Amino acid sequence: MDTHLTSPTTDGSRSPRGVRRAELESSQGQADPIDTLPPAFRWGVATSSYQIEGAVAEDGRTPSIWDTFCHVPGAVANGDHGDVACDHYHRMPQDVALIADLGLDTYRFSVAWPRVQPGGRGPANPAGLAFYDRLVDELLGRGIDPWVTLYHWDLPQELEDAGGWPNRDTAHRFADYAELVFGALGDRVKTWTTLNEPWCSAMLGYAYGLHAPGRRDLGAGIAAAHHLLLGHGLATQRLRAAGSPIELGITLNMATADPATDSPADRDAARAADGLGNRIYLDPLFHGRYPEDVVADLAAEGVRIPVEDGDLAVISSPIDVLGVNYYFGQAHSGVDEQGREREDDGRPVRRVVRRDLPRTAMDWEIVPESFTELLVRLHRDYPGVPMVITENGAAFDDKPDADGFVADDDRVAYLTEHLRAVARARQAGADVRGYFAWSLLDNFEWAYGYDKRFGIVRVDYDTQRRTPKRSAHWYRDTIRRVRGER
Image 1 (cartoon, helix red, strand yellow):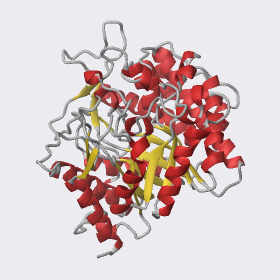
Image 2 (image 1 turned 180 degrees about the vertical axis):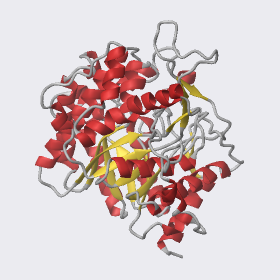
Image 3 (image 1 turned 90 degrees about the horizontal axis):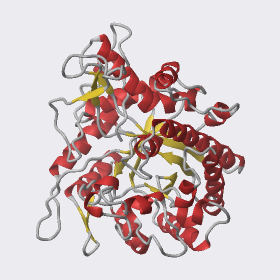
Image 4 (image 1 turned 45 degrees about the vertical axis):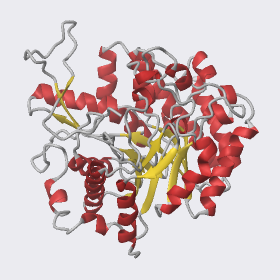
C-alpha cells in the first residue's frame, strides 16, 4: 500500500499538496462535515478471501501463491499463514450477521481464484462456487448488497509456475476466470471490481519481493503491472458483453507524494513516485496511454512496458466506478542525507523522508487532509467516473479487556477524521458515493501475519470469537445519525 500521488505546483493558486486553496476553504465551517453526507451515500466494510477464509485445502481448493509464500522461511512474521485465518469459510453466516447488526448496506469481499477454478484453468469447481453462492444469498437475505472483487492477490500457484503476472497469458486466464464467476453470481451481484491494488500485486510481489510470489525484478514487476491492467480490460469487456445491468470498476491504492522541500530534486522525486505509484495505472485506464515521464524513467532503468497493439484500447474500456483505497501520505526527497542527488551507480536519489506526524501500528503517517486533496485531484484530473472509498482504516495495538472488548479510541479518531476528509472532498466537488471501512475483522495481514489488527471487530484467533470493538459501535451510530435514524 506504499503508493504515492502528488500534483506538483504549476500555478500560484494551488497549495503545496496540489488542491486549490479555494476548494478547501469552501469546504470549511461545518459543525461536522460527516453530517453533510447524503442519504444515498453507500456504507460498507471490506475483506479479502485469503485474509479471512481459511479452509485452504477444502472442497477442491488448490494452493495460491500466498499458500506457497507463507511457507517460505522468513517471508511472513512468526511463520504465520492463512490456513485457518478467521475461519470465515465455516463461520460465514455469523459474519454476515455482524455486518447486518452494524446497519451496513454493502459488503465488499473477494473471490478466491483457486477455490472456484483450481489451478487457474478449466471449468469451475462447483463446491468452490457454492460457497460464494451461499454468501451472496445470505447477504441479500439481510438486505446487504454484495460487492465482488475478483482478484485480491491469491493467484493460483499453477499459473505462477507458468510465469505468473509477468506472463501475458495470465491476463487471458483471468478473463476466463472472471467470466466463470460472473456466470454463477451475475444474476444477483450488481457491482464488480476486477482487481484490488494492482500496484501491490505487481511491485510488492514481483519487483520488491515483499509479497507473494516474492520475486525481486523490476522488469517483471512492470510486466506484471501491464498484464494486470490488460486482464482488467479483458474481464471488463467479457462481463460487459454479458448484457446485464451491472457496475464495473477497479480498485487502486493511492496516496499523496509530497516533495520534502520545494527544491527541484525533491519535486522530481515526488513526480517519479507519483508516476510509478499511480499515474502508471490511472493514465492507461482513463486516458488510454502510459505517462511519457514514467516510460522515460523506466527506460533509464533498462525496463520497457510490454505493450502490444490494441492493449491500451482494451485497458481503457469504460468503467462505472473507481475504487479508492487510502491509508497514508508520504514526503519524498531527491537528495540523500549527505546532500548528493545521485547514487554511486549514477541513478537519481529517491527516498522517503520521515515527517513528525502521528503514525499507526504499521508506522504509516496519519494525514487525513491528504485524503481530501487526493480525492479532489482525482476528480479534477480523471473526471467522469464516480468514486467509492473501497478501503480506509488503520492498525493499532489493540488491548482487549477481560471480556474481549477493545476500546479502540485511536481507531475511532482515525476513522472520524478520514470520513470528514471524504465529506470535505465532496463539498469541494469530488464525486464520492460511498465509504467501506477496512476491515470488518482482524485478519491475516499478509507479510505481517497476525501481528497487525485492522478490524472493527476483534477476532480471538485461539477461539475464533468475534467481539465488536468501540469503533464498530461508533461506525454503526455514525451511519444511523447520517441517515437520520434513531
